[in-house]
Image 1 (cartoon, rainbow, N blue to C red):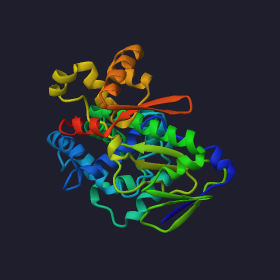
Image 2 (image 1 turned 60 degrees about the vertical axis):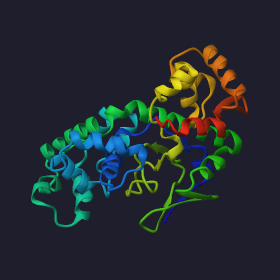
Image 3 (image 1 turned 180 degrees about the vertical axis):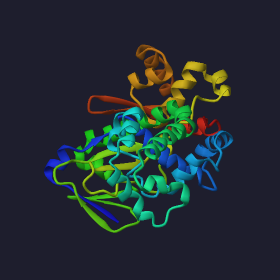
Length: 315
């Protein structure tokens, strides 16, 4: 169990990342790929990636070796994007590289240059992470982005309804909020006082089983949590629904799976908010969609009938 200990300043400085972290997605995508049985959301992804990625390649071997302790592979700078993250990885101090690798005990011969902090080996590691990102993550960036947007809408509702306490309480089942402590399922039993630094919450499309954090207590506090299955967007509605509802209306219904406001639906579907308002009105009158208000925000989501209609037409 990991216990994150908050002060009042930490509550004020707690934020939700606007996007998934590219290097964390590489690490967690690699772990997801090693699963023997994939849920439906990841079945097609795993088949496609395995066709493009040789499991015996050096990049895959390095990822398997280092992902159990991902501090080296996920520098805080990757919050700003792939390139800043890779630049930070390339310039990791030699002592930090050695301290990260020493925990693995005897290393295979091919990994020993990394353990010495060899700059060329670290640069190669960064390029391996770029290559893995291009195979595991980049081709699915739209699906990841839309899924994270759905999660952010959920977190925004929690924040509006319950403040930061509501936001933290909404992180279950991976965490439990008992003010001033956030208890997180973790393989080790340890405490992490935040000491006024706040906590950065990062949604992960490929996350599995439990939330993740860095091992280094001096690093900027981060909690990378798996998206709920209902927030993982899988693409456009099936064409049979296009014939029934019309392409725009079926797209509006599909994109409302995870709950979204009018403007967000318009962006996802690629039409105007006025057009979306007309379509949501028709879908609501047909009993397929409900519209709720959270403060000043309007959120459209599926009714049970709408879920049943899409149930036979997964994206």
